[in-house]
Length: 324
Ligand code: NAI
Image (cartoon, rainbow, N blue to C red):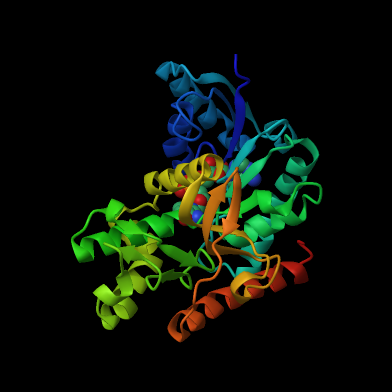
């Protein structure tokens, strides 16, 4: 029998965790023929809630779910892990300065990176969902010198999916008719959803919409969608975030011709080497590759640069705080 894949989810008792765990256990993360064991990492005061979720996972009697472990110790949670979904993070509270936010998250993602370094399986793949996702991923990666840097990624797939859905509605086409969508930069309000390489019906999407819609409606709608969800739902995106995490890991493992993911830059497209920034990517043989050779017009250049500048500022801030 096939050895189960160990999947660790941090922040397992949170709202994304609740939307995510059942889909992993049902086979949607890795494939309908891949058995999994789940490790649920939580802070001590949320372990009991995670135990409740585990009871419900038991009650689903998922044929692929071969075991559940619940712990507040990262060294246990990441022991032998093949896939780590880092969802738990310190949210920004009212009046919190950026430095405080980065410092609080450094206290989470530094030790988790080290635990991954020391205990995870050789084929470990890490997706950081918890915000600020790109910089949290950088912190974790910097604490895991023995793990290839490319194994640390951050999630911009939700932004990618939001962009697909907005464009499909605008053009009156199916999401499946849209090819080559790209999100560049940081998972933040500065992100740049790029329609200049996106194809609909074999033609460039940017040429099928007017410039003012692209600039004044599409880009801000995608970038501020998270806030709009909070406004409407009274809680932040959870099922859609979990769905994007599933898509990201599924495509990483099983391959794709084109999507968006924040991965360690090799200097492509002028993004400084080492930053974890969103790119157009393909996945082949279980590895992300940045899609090369795209022409970047002035409009796009300005927006990519602005988002990358923000990532550099976050990196410099965590450096100054001694977090990396
Ligand atoms: P939530 O507050 O419902 O759950 C977070 C959970 O993490 C809590 O149960 C908390 O106890 C746990 N946690 C905190 N510190 C931890 C630690 N050191 N180890 C293990 N667990 C820990 O939050 P929700 O809605 O599930 O969101 C989680 C994160 O995902 C947030 O940072 C949010 O901003 C981010 N997010 C990212 C998106 C993206 O597109 N990249 C989209 C939506 C949310």
